[in-house]
Image 1: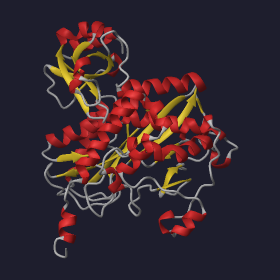
Image 2: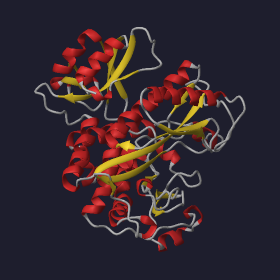
Image 3: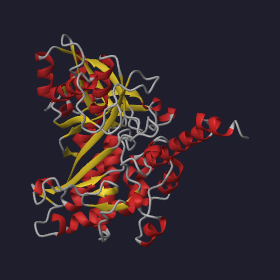
Image 4: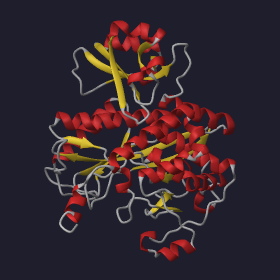
Amino acid sequence: MDKKTVLKLVEEKDVKFIEFWFTDILGVLKSFTITKEELEAAFNEGMGFDGSSIRGFVRIDESDMVAVPEPDTFVILPWRPKEKATARMFCDILTPDGKPFEGDPRYILKRNLDYVKKKFGLDFYVGPELEYFYFKNPETTETLDRGGYFDLIPRDEAIDLRRETTLALEEMNIKVEYAHHEVAPSQHEIDLRYTDALTMADIVMTHRLTVKEIAFKNGVYATFMPKPLFNENGSGMHTHMSLFKNSKNAFFNQKGKYYLSETALQFIAGLLKYTPELCSIICQWVNSYKRLVPGYEAPVYLSWAVRNRSDLVRVPMYKPGKEKATRIELRAPDPACNPYLAFACMLRAGIKGMEEKLKAPEPIEENIYEMTENEKKKRGIKSLPGSLIEALGLTEKSAIVKETLGEHTFNEFIGNKKIEWDNYRIQVTNYELDRYLPIL
């Protein structure tokens, strides 16, 4: 859509309010609302706001920012009243002199997509699987059900929640592939049909809010927290990736082993080499590392496989030999990350494998969780970082993450995460009190 089409739709659909959406460096959705009377001027000049109040943006002495709406992202929000309706658009964030703000996560993804397009002529497509939990309210982890993977539970409250959420997403032209119960109690998943990475990052932000809005409307709480329940599976955002040149899938080779091209194998090698350095971006919270432990279907080890779900990288074989279905799945990201920064870093890690012409090791189809430490060492199987501070130590030394994010966001992100770790490590937990207080 262009500006003219949006202005026409606003009149035809009785839209009174337009929310301008963007994210801070942590992927927290930010918004302010204008009325339709201000929309044409906003298209032409943008809307000014105080950037110093947004986490990771700018200092108070350089606070002026301009939000310019992207007309092609215009949708009417289905959970808001139909009369005097509310729509939303994602925004590009500019400095007062009209230049893209280097700390805008959406711009960071755009810049990296442009880099790959100009250097290789490739477009990046992604299809994430977002897992999440429903609880009775935000203050408790009381579940709505005791179901498991793909369970169909009669009169399950969440069936209607998933149905209403799917209908809301489709009303906003977001295509849903699957909706189902996941492994843990009260854990669910709504999968999105793959599209280009920028559109998908916008969709992930919309998906998370839609799930929460529909839950709130029905008197329950939805969370994308990676590991809210002890001794149960956490929530991941397994991300399927492919590179296309015009209409050709660059990962596909009809005669290649597993139908994979040399490009795909180099991309896999790049992910295996560089994912530890970008782990703090795709798993960005203290709680993220409670999920990345053996035994709960979460990846821990730097390996790849064709079917094995204990590996970091998997090549799905639902439709072997079909070009458009050939893709690579990275299983480490969780659904609470900033999708703009995550997709940018995942792309550049894989592309680095192509630039360095890395060779992928042989796939590992055995269950790595059952291997001894000596077996893993003998086969050269290394692990992802085990905590946020360990992950930050790798990120801080990473040339590829710094290049991907740019110096401003790189420094702001690491600084913010170190504060989070310091705040976490001074806490005294119930585990410590239960374990140590009676004996020490």
